[in-house]
Length: 355
Ligand SMILES: CSC[C@H]1O[C@H](OP(=O)(O)O)[C@H](O)[C@@H]1O
Figure 1 (tube, helix red, strand yellow):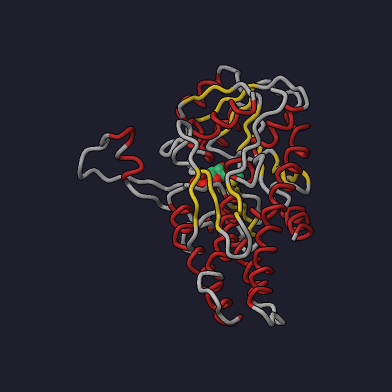
Figure 2 (cartoon, helix red, strand yellow):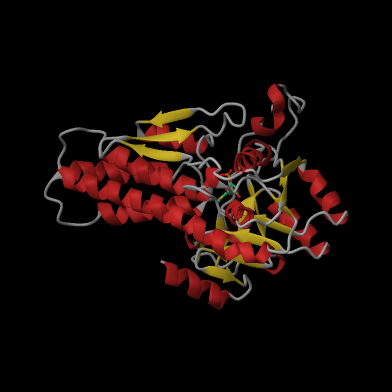
């Protein structure tokens, strides 16, 4: 496909008193619907219900959510606008606990809020929007850098397996894990992708397969339980996934099912790559078992396909993420280069240089 459709899950409309426009990812792949978020509550809800999702995309959306919150009351003083902006950041921080990019982006916005010297409210609102736009553009650039850095690692691969959606829909554009696939594909490499459907919310079947189809990359959706079989059959040359938070020791937290894939890849001697921007590292956490794992609602499992699939009264366990230990990760592909996850000193050096 010569000119694939560019997928951007979110955009800011108008100026400092504008609004956030999102692709509602809960409606894909059958409906491409955009929703406008004109209040902080609407941004919070969009993140919570996964209308916008994926660590980097959540961070960008929250940054714009702070801009919306700051401007909610018209003709206010700078101090009032600052109070509203802080309140918006505090509220948005409660939307989802695992993706560290949410908190990284909100911290960036708080640094602007706490700056002195704004003598006019408009100047403050303009500075906030400029920071949100900078975060947005930085993620675009980061994703393309990840693609460039990762493509050589899969140059000899013909079949790659991925899990969940770490594509354009999870970022500002282009993706992280899928950026590596897009970069290899766009350079002329013949590549096929196995996309785990990724229960319970099916980000792989609904979103990754849709993205890859739009980009002209051959893709086969498989049930999560089939990953072992296709690996055993010798049909997977590499596994590449995204991440929501990476601890200082290289443990990588990602969509539930990722840990199992890392064990399977090790057993079958298949390279297991994690692709993530440096903003997804949390050097304050020594290891992955300290990463907060989001527990989501029972109905996401018990009411699949429009009908109840679990008997009333039966317990359901629905952790949204798990952690691949550093020793099972072949390499972490970042915007600053490829990292050996078990080399903590190098992890810290690369990530701190990026900040
Ligand atoms: C590029 S980060 C993508 C990452 O986020 C996804 O989680 P969710 O769909 O719940 O936001 C999943 O873990 C992806 O790998």
